[in-house]
Length: 550
Figure (tube, rainbow, N blue to C red):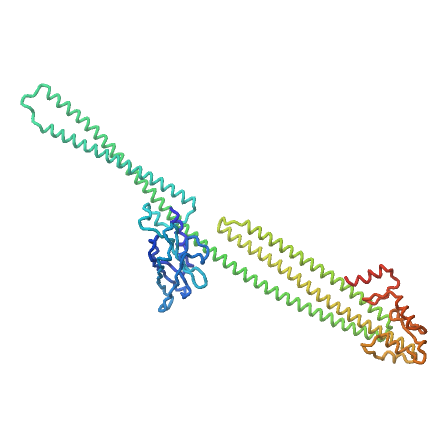
């Protein structure tokens, strides 16, 4: 078959497919150039025509609806109501049509959304005199074959045509030879009849009868040889007729094989369309499953957040309860013991803070690992995509399924990365909460230190009423040691005032401000946690100060 016949096969399948909603009617194999073309088509009940629909002429092999050669808008029928098929037509002006370029084109119906609703069989633009004269029964058949099969069939067709031509030539030659022999036989017969019909001469010579008999024998021999030649020619003609009958039978078998292949091809196309429907259904199932999975993940995250919030509230309540208990115990027990306990709690809180920071770092590392795995999976996915080939349609379906699985794995890794990021944010929030608790404990420690110093000052100034000193309240805006100076001051004798070191809380009853300042400066005090580090070396003291930055 020629290339035009091969290109005609695909649109026919589209026309007879169940997905086609527009069927083009009476599309000839060719149109004369420089002539207006009338396109007739039938709309099925499943399609609602619109004024934004259009019919375009596309070159066979188009890949996009925007690759049209020309188009005209569709004029829907306003009188048509109901699901009955509707037959309409449009006219393409000759000035916008292709010329006699030897290419094949087809009509395509495109709706307002850019979806193809129907396509016609291929046709070309050429003069009627240029149409091919070598058409046979195969031209009426629409078969999709491979290029190799097409070339093989073309070669077989050429061989058959050559053999038929040679047989015709041989037949003509044999007919000519037979005609010559028949003409010669007729001539001989006429001559024999002429000789027999002649009268005998009045005075025949003695050798005349013998001559006449010899001549008749010669004529009889020549007639016998001619009869034999005629019989051989007749036998050869019968043999040629039998060969021609066998060739016709072979041609019929070939035509039957072509019809069988056409039927098989249609069944294959139907199976392929069914496979495409199954793939679409699988894609819809995958998308719905993915949406359900995302919804479940969101619900799980919300439940986790609620549970974490409840745990944090329970911890806050427990901390408030323990803090209230500590306040009650601090009022009853020694202030120094409570301060030491608070310092130990503060140390534990710092250790917990460090562990939370470490866990935050580990979560960051896990997130980075997940991102690297995501990049690796993406790279592998790209490599697999590049290695995929379009060998068979079933392999394409399997490749799509594999790609869906890889996409699902990629989404899972994305979700892991997102979960790691949320965990990291939660750890940061937990870090801030712990930092706030540490600051709260620092303020409580400072208040307890103020209360302790005030209690000691009251005991020194008024040993008979220790309970009164504990009930005294201080303004939060006043400095601790200003209040101590006010309590221990003696206006009548300023040089004998009792002064207390703000770091070690040691009482100095007979020193002035300068000596107290020198004593306070002699201490190594951490500027962040106010811890006295007099027994530490300078390097240990610096390491302690820098440890707060971690």
